[in-house]
Length: 232
Image (cartoon, rainbow, N blue to C red; front, side, top):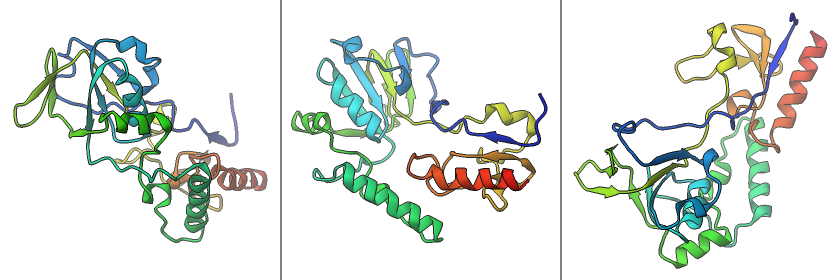
């Protein structure tokens, strides 16, 4: 099929990110990413290591810890939003960030408040003393995880709540990606690939438009892309 322009809008939620740790292939228990998590009942009576410092990790930990013993592992100290921060505050903060970025100003957005929303299940986990995080382990062995100082924890499963990366594999043959995994964009729309202006990328984050990976932020870059294609 031939086309005068292509818009790539495959998003950032189809390519789970798995950090690499020595011994991952040796671990005989179960390893799964957030996308493979279904119900805490799958882990009843087990010991589960939950990896990640964001909302997904905190909420998975909160659920699994009701039926299993758990160890929470994060790359840095978890940051919790105040208990009274609700959806209205989050939306207003997100909109303020989008407006700031459009005007060329820095704005930390929701991340400036913290990372983890204190949903009811997370508050319950806090009350049960579950929200105690350990530093990231250095490796896995056949039966658990091992820290740099040699301490270890046997476990039955590791749940990797470690986010996603832009789904750009379909563009690999074009050879446009730089060392950071992104494709430089610009032009009037801000979404045209600099090395191939017939290709536009919409919805992958700030590098393709302010907050463009969110429903609140994708509109302006989508409209700019449509206008550029119409003009073309």
